[in-house]
Length: 103
Image (cartoon, rainbow, N blue to C red):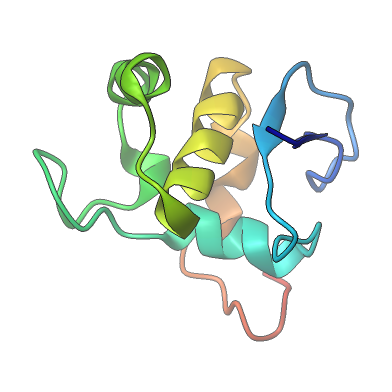
């Protein structure tokens, strides 16, 4: 599986780890905004934004397998963000307009 280092967060800080990507993915800030605002469509946390998911829930998915597709890629990214303690810096992106790509 191809992966991309988490180098594209707004601070441009090098973060250990990588997230799976597909050819359709880009390092567009709008994708980070969309990830933060993605709503869980199923399970115990149905209706919660990915950034609101507890870290142990994402750790479980990392161990057992993320869903296929865009949701799984975004959950994997959020897992990396949370295990590296970066979710607080993304709080301003909650509710941001993904069409503009800025907060």
